[in-house]
Length: 257
Image (cartoon, rainbow, N blue to C red; front, top):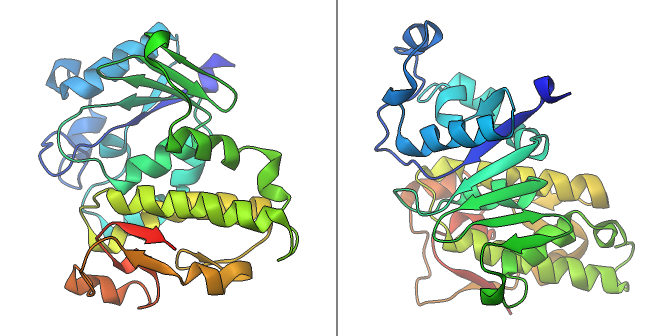
């Protein structure tokens, strides 16, 4: 029923948003607040949620206790279920701050996306519609990946000699590239920000992902490189969270040979 459905908001709010759920504001927010106090992106998402006659809207800044490590440990692994289980995800394009790796994962996993930005666009696992169809020229990289993630092709990778392995390597290289082009504000979040996509693919293929590389094709997966002359970890803290042979430790554009 519609009463049990919810809409999720995917947007980049960075460190500039003051209206958020924290241990010091939790009681105040539970008591209620005026919608006018919310940032415009969230207010717009509420309006859209009402259009669809859906009762609930999930917003990370208001549903996860910000700055609380214990709450984060509990909530971060659930991001895959949050976005895959949503009736619809509203993707706010052009919101302030940078494009983060979190939004890459969110928009790959959710079954339906309504993009609001310079153009209005609808995207699901089977179709896309643009506000101005004559401006559309084929699938983008992210749209092709989304179709792959929810297709039967993903589960038809059974042996190293199968063309399915080549398909897996191709699409994972694209996901790697998309992720590496995004910014992540907290170094320790890098692996977690891709956790949902990895778990989704592990569940459908039965293969193990090792710090961003797939075990059945591990040798070829090690052939990643940086698209510039940087040969060191960009962040001193990244070594603490991923092995040296994983591209997840790099804060630079990553490609495959």
